[in-house]
Image (cartoon, rainbow over all chains, first blue to last red; front, side, top):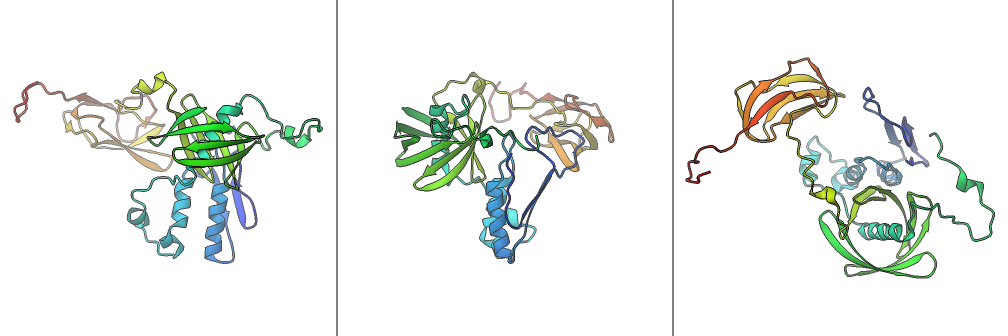
Length: 138
Length: 176
């Protein structure tokens, strides 16, 4: 899991990699809040934050939220309670970056990423402690 | 090397040529891509595609890989791998049972009622949400096993429905 960060971005997070959500949980596990000087900038910041928000292992509504934020009517502030039915009734996740996904799949196959921890240091350089630091907050 | 990759029911043929260090040339469908890459961790790959850098996050399961790019996950399978699991019809739920511990809020049927596939049978509440369980097939309710207010766990059969099978010739002349 990687949380977004940056100016104007606040992630109130109650979870971490490996965390098991118990049955008696509060429905809000984590909250992402973004602010900026103008509405347009805040929307842009939130889209960026969502794109950088990495949660592996479960499905999230991040792709849908990004498309809502990018929608022309949303940016114009023309949102009513029927926004989703009117504009996004047939929504499917965007496939713009599909080539990149295929590339990643194949690179993963040919490098066997999961079998070895590849060192990105050139040969002979001392192993930097940054590479062996474990996950924070585990 | 050739791959046939499937995502969202589309299959694409890709061929790969390894380039100089940590780069490949990929031909996917009709597109030629020059890709540089750097493996940052078991789940994190940095990719440079047409001069633009992307972070790709990868998780793997028995059938394929989930790859997240710019917030969007792509589930990709190797179309050439024979996976026995795919043949199992494991996802159709035939029992009326709660998906998580819940409380019964409303019972929409009674013993003896005829129900159509997809019609609501019972309403449960859990984690501040209401869920309606629906009939998995046309049939007759043979028993209602719970009452409003009962706490129920996954696995408990809340309502028994006997599947309606054609036993006599239908009005349109087809005989069984």
